[in-house]
Figure (tube, rainbow, N blue to C red):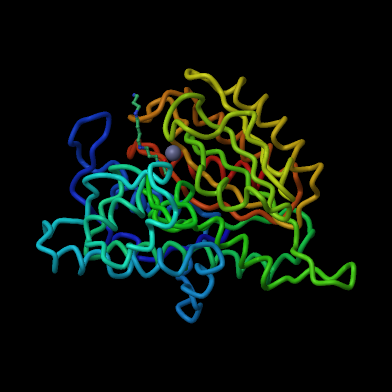
Length: 363
Ligand code: SP5
Ligand code: ZN
């Protein structure tokens, strides 16, 4: 299997985050991608490829994120330091809670300082922006786009099973249209989905229609950002399995099924803490049935291995054998599939678990 990876992913390296009220070392560390790369390099069936530097990453990011959010990410660190902020990283002090303000007040936005903007474009305390964060976030999108480009070149829409791994870092599924959070700055999978639609216009009916894409999110946490981005869009089906009543806390219930034209194009499968292989795979089969019914041209998998039994911030009990079964189950969709890396924080096993999913898919 082809693996796309960009060394700039390693640059983003904040020293700490605030987790469960404690100042802790940053869980989403560069040792994660290094370990995964090492594992796949030493496995015979993977080929690690560099990303395509000719891609216009920002142009594709603008299909998902607002221009002002992208500009914020690019300028946040320098503006923060210029305003006298700590040189370690941009870190919000308070959050702009949308519901506390009437929309017209936002016209004062132009006068906001760096710390005000930090709390406007972020929703938690796990996304410090360092001098290098923007570069890594763009590298992560470039990784997803390079992999999507290769998938599209080898596997036209609706062709049978084939797989590519976008070894993205930082992850993306918590990032919304204009918000970072949960270690995520740019929504790599969502940008790749739009890219696949843009380079494969669907013209069956004579009128330009967007190609149907399915995103299966198997990270332990609900992908609130991806859900938000496509909530009213029937061309991208979003299906998520995740822990009930855990981070990000406010989204991911069964009753969230999309809105407007996107109604019934979002499916959530919240699972109890302690879920193990058999319970997980039984629910995965139901999620895969929803994807099959929608007949997507491509499947994107937001792949988190923070569902692992030893993950330090999560409470599922999946095993290595479970990951192989998950890969096999996804392969049964028989579609071109782009795996996009999301979470997973047990460094000792993260590479082996990712490898198990991808090898399970190839079986
Ligand atoms: C991409 C991704 O996996 N982001 C996850 C960010 C999670 N950050 C907050 C985790 C809060 C964990 N608190 C529950 C502790 C129970 N042991
Ligand atoms: Zn996660």
